Length: 567
Length: 55
Image (cartoon, rainbow over all chains, first blue to last red; front, side, top):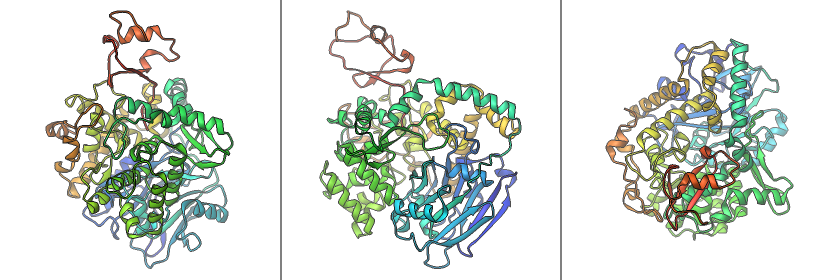
């Protein structure tokens, strides 16, 4: 079975399939996104207009339930940054698309009318249906109704009210392996692009397990064994399993880099209340629906996801991640997991990026719209978003817009996208990534917190950021969860052999870096054509002058250093 | 805690009953990551962080 490109046109409501072009063959996931954008859309186009396209591209190794390696890359020109955007998610979307034989799903065209659509994909092909019964509903209710209609074996990618209103903070939710619509392709407003196509949900109706054939089964199996052995025996796996990403909170705080009160301080007085230890203890104490170790994709042995329950053991939200604990917790002066979890769930149901919305609320607090620490007021503001009031629409557009409207200088963003829960003044290598990544401020594009460097030395960061950016882009191209990275890193040759075993291609020794370089080159080419210059590869001015207590560091990596990252 | 004169990051790690190999830990002293041979001073605040690379 050869994979094919599936093209869904929302104007004439047809779905066609075509062979994969030669130049796309060896690309997948994050690498395929800019390739398709360069080939098919005018780089200067309006991201919410008829010429932008919404892309779903599973990674290169997706389809075999290789642990932690079935992720879906979603992409388009971003309405938030104006540049190339790839956001990836776990759950079942990637796996099921590959089992249907889909190399890339391209959603294009201008919607014909005002009605909302569903796109149904199955072994019979693709067809559009009306989405009347889920239009305007939150993510949870929409997913529940769709699962009722189409059965509980389907995968679903869908938007919530924020996406329907084409807010730039809107993402695209995907079902996890247990049917929760909680794995979000969050960053950069892809939910708004889906909304601009008047597409509410994609139903991936593929109940059968149809992994693509392997070119060299023996080689693949051997490489898989080596990778799995390395993954299961590495101590990082257990930390992720037991604590999830929440374990990062105290580490970041230890460096003086956790965002507090709209990025005004780097250490949180109540850090023990939002630590990984406290999260784990709380989940275990309460029992019931709570789970400290949950897999979002079938077959994942890391299981870094979790489920947070209330004191009665009833589920509040899944997952509760460090980024939310940072941006919606300490960044808003909130130190209660119950409050953070409820805000997380509200944002999940709206279908928004918790990083962007947390940052937006932080700027809103500086603007006097809420007090730091006031979780109830934060929830009220999210209701404004849900109702699409003028204030809600301002918040829904993200941190940069809130800052512009209220004349707030302290906006933590690059290329219009909010900065993640690592203050770049105290982890300068990550600041280099935020500044220079074609994705805008994005920690998953190249986090450097574990690098063996002094994070405060402005001259020691370019190499670590560059290496991290290529590596992360490589994992994003494979469809690998970045948490599996240490498994691959300690199983030399595994990636090269998995690719050769699956496809018969010889990518070379440094497969990961090679894929990463190609991806970054394509992304930078698109951004250049879209009008980006070196001036866009900078942190906001205020972060170069305002010291961050307690280190009192400023972001002082020189422009010449930033400009040589991709030399 | 009390350590002998001239203690280093490495000697601190040796004195603890660790469940994880030292090379997987990140040692941060007064908010800066330090190498094993680095000396420790009176009043230093030492953090030991588990192997996790973020999220």
